[in-house]
Image (cartoon, rainbow, N blue to C red):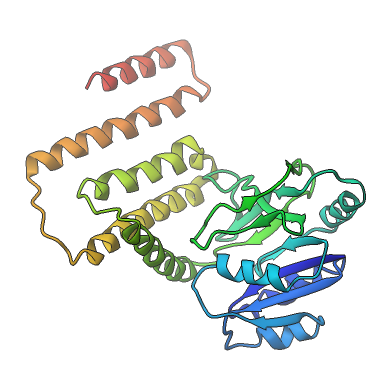
Length: 301
C-alpha cells in the first residue's frame, strides 16, 4: 500500500493538479493548516482523507503529523504546488516491488516567475520524498534536512524523472513567503543563542549572492538568475536584521574606515568569482592572459 501525504494552506489553485497526478497511490492524506478557501472542498472530490493541523508557517511539523496518519507501507511526500509525471510514478511503483532501498531522493524541476530555473541552486534540487514507513522523518525546524534510516538512492535525472514544482509565480508571493520564512529563521537563530554581529549585514547577503550567481551558475539563467540571486541575498539580509530586532536593536558603532574595509574585502571576493566564471567562457589566448593577470592582482589587493 502506498500513501501520499500533502500539506495544505489555501491551495485551491494547485490542489486539483497535484491530486490528479496521484491516481497511482492507494491513499491520499491531506494535512490542512486552516485553509480559508476551497482547498478542502476540492480535495474531498478526490476522496482524500483530511486532517487538521495548527498553522506553523512552514511544512515540517505537518509532514511528521501526516506520517502518523498514513497507513501505507510506502510513503510519498508531495507539496500542493507540485505534480508527479506518470513515468516517474510508474518507476516508483516498480521500485516497491523489487527494491532493497529504504528511501529515494527525487529531483525537482522548479518553475519560478514562469521559467524552469536550471541553475541558481534550484536544479536538480534533490528531495527525499519516497520511502518505506519508518525510514524518514523531519526535524521541527524550517527547511530542516530529513532524518533517514537505512539505505537510500537518487533517482537518476533523465526524461521526466523529476517532480514539477510550480514555485514562486510572482514577486508578491515571493516577498510574502520571504517575510514569513525570515521571521522563523531569525527566531531559530535567536533561541540557538546565535547573536547578531554587524559584519553579518555585509557577509551573509554577499555570500548568498556569490553562491547563487557564480558558484551555482545563476548567470546562466539570465535575468531570472540575477533577480533570484539578488532576492535570495536580500532574504539573508532581512534574516539578520530581524535577529538584530530580536535583540532590541542593540546599538553598535561602525566607522567609515570599518565599512570601507568590509566593502573592499567583499568586493574582492565578488571580483574573484566573476573572473573565475569569465575564464570558463570561450576566449582567445590574449583574453585568458588578461583575466588571469587581473585575478592575480585582485588576489593581492
